[in-house]
Length: 249
Length: 293
Image 1 (cartoon, rainbow over the protein chains, first blue to last red):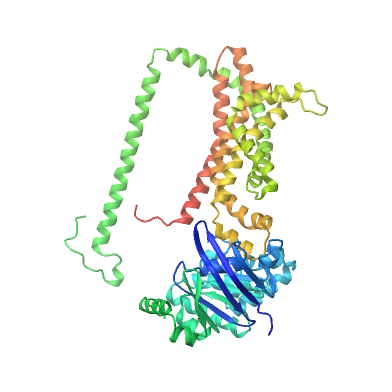
Image 2 (image 1 turned 90 degrees about the vertical axis):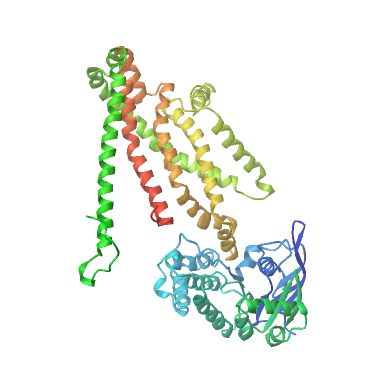
């Protein structure tokens, strides 16, 4: 069996007295898309932040390509370089143009020269249909365009793994589609993705594995047609019924 | 124009409807009224204040000792010469203050136990120099440092005065910068670190550029304060505008030179004040389009 790109074993995270992640086990093979679903506060974002080392775990091991990245002696900046992250609120740098946002990391940490980094950035921006926005500032773009730039910025580092943290939750309904179709394209190109989402229809069509988090544990995981259509756990059924009522399909 | 009884839509080529035309007329007449009222009120106010001063019992003496035209003309060239020194001190200290202030602010944001002494020293620096009255610091630096008789220690009152100004103002400016740094949302840091940028790179490329933009209006305000505080170097004997005014005042037994110097400092400050106002207004406009209120 080949080494998974990402594996979590018994991951625990506490904030003060509150335990957010109780014991998370998860394995993501290369080219797989795993979606994390669950109510707000179930630990989806915390798990992604732990994987990206924005938070230190309180127990357990997280491995990236077999290497223990929760080892305190590891170079955290080097690990983060191998993981691309897209946030719910885009978090573009407002004082930089779109092009500068995308080329910042390749130039500073990838040591690419300016022309090379810009050429590559333009290829990526063209692919998401935003080449003509390269010299605009983020506040001139719609939410969907900003989020696509954020995806491109994360891709510019050539990440081994892409983490998407509710990337469509801040978008107007008509802008959700453009971001989701971009994620779909990335999947087809073979990107390994872990994605926290409320978009159940997207999870159903794009995910290889759906993971249902509840109160800090993985309550159920499997292929989407099983977890989303015939869940075995009553809590999963309850959650799906509520979210379908709320209009997230 | 009378109020139209009811709204009737205008034909496409007729321009605005009758109702809209009446509204515009009404608003114009209200504006004319406000302008007239403001004019009358200003004239009345100035007349009352002016009369109270001119009719006061001591006015002839005050006029003679503070508003002597001959003394003013006589002292002006020297005071202007002194002001040129103030302007040069201002330019040099403003640059040094920004550099030192930014450095102290950056040191205060360092994380980790290794940097504890640096953080503590930077905090002590801002506490001490913000608390110390500038005039006392001027004496301490101006007479204390040369008193040490160290080799290479400057003795010029201009240089020593500049050092004292930089010490005091950089402590204030450091706190302004620190507030600016802390006002940048943590998600910006998270985004930068996620891209693999180090702490230093994140600070330099992402946090500081945004912080500096935000604190520009308060920094311009500190610059206005500095513009007049450069006059305090006269207490060390530097021949600046205040010192020349003092010399002329003593020679003529008349306070007019002080008024001349004071008005010149006001003239010096006005452009900066306008720039500061314009800049903050622009920042506000960018953030919010104001409605009817």
